[in-house]
Amino acid sequence: MFINISQKVRVYLSKVDCEFLHKYSKKQDFKQSELDVDEINIAKTLASKSILVRKKLIADTQYAVNRSIRVFNHDHKKQI
Image 1: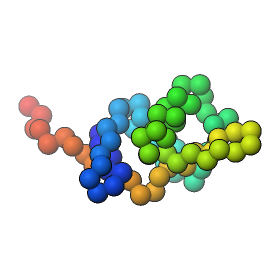
Image 2 (image 1 turned 90 degrees about the vertical axis):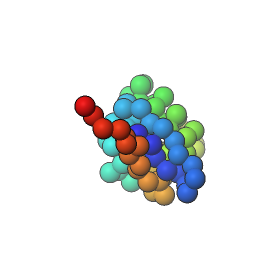
Image 3 (image 1 turned 120 degrees about the vertical axis):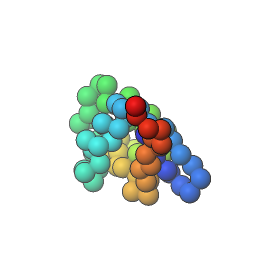
Image 4 (image 1 turned 45 degrees about the horizontal axis):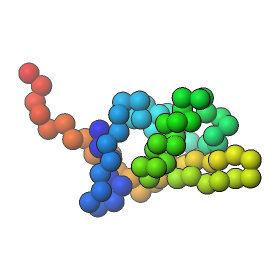
């Protein structure tokens, strides 16, 4: 699946990334201490792709989903 970050910038997400994004997209923000070990690496990857917004706190890191992104389904091929 592709996600539009801006008008001409698309980023590809794997199924694991999409599941993580779907799980936390309804929350306004969440902290790194609330995540599992595997989810921390996914959150860091999504933050580097500009899908999550990261805010450094004194003892923790706070993440929020970037609200300016748009989901773009790139599956144009027909399934036989």
